[in-house]
Amino acid sequence: MKPLKIKKICCIGAGYVGGPTMSVIAHKVPDVEITVVDSNPQKIALWNSENLERLPIFERGLKEIVAQRRGKNLFFSTDIDSAIEKADAIFISVNTPTKTFGLGKGMAADLRYIELCARQIARVAQEPKIVIEKSTIPVRTAQTIKHILDNSGNKVKFQVLSNPEFLAEGNAIEDLLNPDRVLIGGEESREGEKAVEALIEIYSRWVPKERILKTNVWSSELSKLAANAFLAQRISSINAISALCEKSGANVDEVARAIGMDSRIGNKFLKASVGFGGSCFQKDILNLVYICQTMELHEVANYWMEVIKINNYQKERFAKRIISTLFNTVVDKKIAFLGWAFKKETNDSRESAAIYVALTLLEDLASIEVFDPKVSEAQILADLQMHSDGNFSDNIKIQKEPYKAVEGAQAIAILTEWDQFVKYDWKRIYDSMKKPAFIFDGRNILNAKEIRKIGFHLYQIGK
Ligand code: UDX
Ligand code: UDX
Image (cartoon, rainbow, N blue to C red; front, side, top):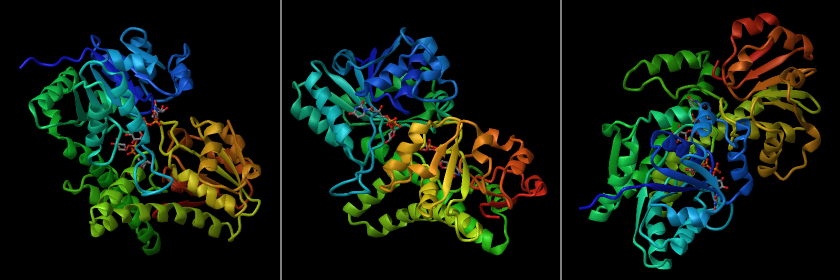
């Protein structure tokens, strides 16, 4: 059996997953030529910008790799057809948002972009290709892709692989360089096996063989959803305990430490917070729930749905706590938000808890000033717009300077755990605020003793 060799790669979707993943492959496999394409020309222009500070995605270590490989074996282009045409392997890493309409509204994944990609590949390809699902998708989507490819194309042979991405934003480059595992799902046939081996050949250039797992396509697809559901479940579990801690006088950080030292439980992902955000957890669990429902597995669906419910409860609890502490009214009170991103070290704010907390406070007519080191003003306003239909523009301001955002505020809410927040001059902040001055630390990053000594009234999660 003659092995397949991947020499040219095309990646459709130059987002948080496609951009960094392809940059790392280009870095580690210099003899493979990679073209990343996107239907959004502005995004491609940003990936091609001379000034590397303008790359559309902020990830530690990314710009250095792009600087090294761009124009050599890494290209960003809007010419999707020609990139597909010349590639041996095509990664699909377009977004798959939760449906906002029709059947499965609010739960199912909207697969229209995946389908568009499949149709485009089928139309253009004149030679056999390996098509690789990178985007997280419902189980059995590979079958849909294969169906479209086989039935709408030029009778070219395709192999569809599932190769889900497990990178966490903010740590993407490190995760890609040193992954816990790489998962490759392929068809259980001779051709399927050859395609899987070709992709293994790429990853094995830097990932130890024992960390590369081969499974069937459906196991691979489901593993991604299950991994995210398990991770999110840990956060909802500790957040549920945090509510109980507040009532009982226990301290959630102490509880987390105590349970995390049980090696069967482990100490990661036990940080109580204002709630998880990001493009994946909620979407993937909703996806899982929807799949279970369509398969009549209602108990299983309800079980996973609780993870989301606790997360919503946690965000709501935080916002309500702010209102009740500020003497049950926030009308015209200035509340400063430190942080907008869904976690530190990223400029991504998709599904960030900050959005929901802000909307609740705005509904109660608070006046909010936001500072985030990486999220742009346009993005913050777009987030609010997307999640509401209200008219709040007069009550929200975005500041480029943290000390400006807190000046004259009645309260500060910390929504993202950016390291710089801890190092601020909190005495100076206290002096510039209205009294009594409150801090609602949604990430438990501040040193409670020192903060209280300055004079602040401090609320932390689960304490
Ligand atoms: C991620 C993951 O890929 C996916 O697993 C998860 O399900 C959703 O989020 P991400 O890279 O973070 O995707 O998404 P995003 O940053 O929105 O990037 C997707 C890109 O695909 C965008 O740049 C968009 O312009 C592009 N796109 C979308 C296309 O090029 N063509 C399309 O038809 C649709
Ligand atoms: C996640 C998965 O970790 C990754 O493997 C998958 O590929 C995509 O989804 P990501 O969403 O980028 O990655 O970030 P992650 O670090 O998992 O954080 C998600 C959210 O959970 C953030 O809002 C974070 O602040 C929150 N979180 C995380 C907690 O509240 N407590 C924790 O202990 C850990």
